Length: 115
Ligand SMILES: [Cu+2]
Image (cartoon, rainbow, N blue to C red):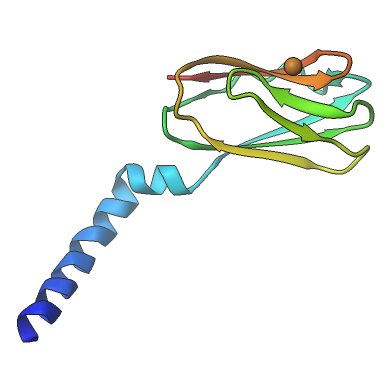
């Protein structure tokens, strides 16, 4: 009984610093990519973020036109509503370069590189 308790405390003590310094924290805390599109064009230009494999990515898109956002490769599609932020969240498990488009005009909003 006492041995089990001591072991549990030891595990917690090990887990906390590892989580703060290591990849566990990176996996939980998402990389946020904010995009505002006006008439199919991303404000400030096409975003080209580079993220690390296995990071959680949260893409937030606000647009005044269009019906869907589509992340190629990962093939995630979300319906958008005019002026309402739409969120795509995923774990970047696949490496490569992936385009985020606004449909139906196929406007390029972002290019996400996963390394
Ligand atoms: Cu597409």
